[in-house]
Image 1 (cartoon, helix red, strand yellow):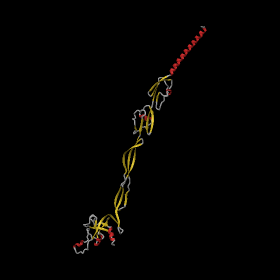
Image 2 (tube, one colour; image 1 turned 135 degrees about the horizontal axis):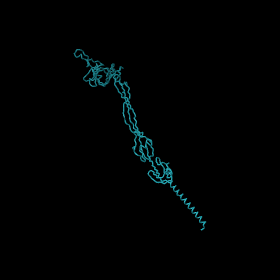
Image 3 (spheres, rainbow, N blue to C red; image 1 turned 180 degrees about the vertical axis):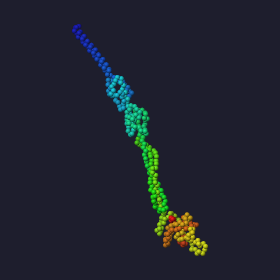
Image 4 (cartoon, rainbow, N blue to C red; image 1 turned 90 degrees about the vertical axis):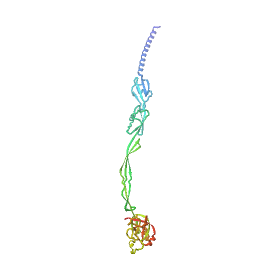
Length: 354
């Protein structure tokens, strides 16, 4: 072999060997560098754990690479901006939806944990003393819990009711019948009630009487009514009477005039009152009508008027009689013939007031 050729190839192999040595060293360094860039991390997504080798620098980059998103209220540790280190453990705690219903509104909030009272505080709901809630305040919430706050309100209202007055009617025997006079005007009273009204979420559910009191007493209305009756006689006179009574009237006479020759003649025409009978004046009445009672009998006025005699029609009870009972009277007439003409008639007797 030519000594020149051998020298060339020996130089070539030497150079190639040097190049391979240099290349191997570079590859080793590159491999070591790349290995140093890779990080082994653990991702715990709400209990689902996975080990990942990644070249991402931050937590956020890693989540973006694997399309892992965070929802409302989700918690992550470390934070999205934190740089990844080898053996970093990323923990995601997923939030659960909890609905709070209060004051006519609903609000869904997302939390990872907490008691009922914590949730109310988070959504700015203040629970008052009498308000109701469907869960104990100390109870831990669970996914999709629905917390309902029922507002309970109370107020005391005052209601008034009129108390009607009484009408008192009194008789006045100094006033004519049909005439009335108000002695005292009536006035309604007032009853006050205090009532406790309970509302549930603004709707009235109960009323309870606390107290009631008469704040103003009623004043009676007093009216006097006349009891005095009046009748106008045929002569135009007005007679006041207390009552009237339907009676059967007969007529009697004392008989022929006394001669005075006999002892009994001195009792001729003497009535039970001790007075002598008088025509158009004396009547006999039952015992329930006192002696001396004056009455007006319009039928007798008419009877005598038809015969041309004008009388007042006023008679006095001065006599009794064995047959005069009940609603019977006996009218004195001095003429026997007139007593027969009169006979037996119905009359109205008006009792004249004293």
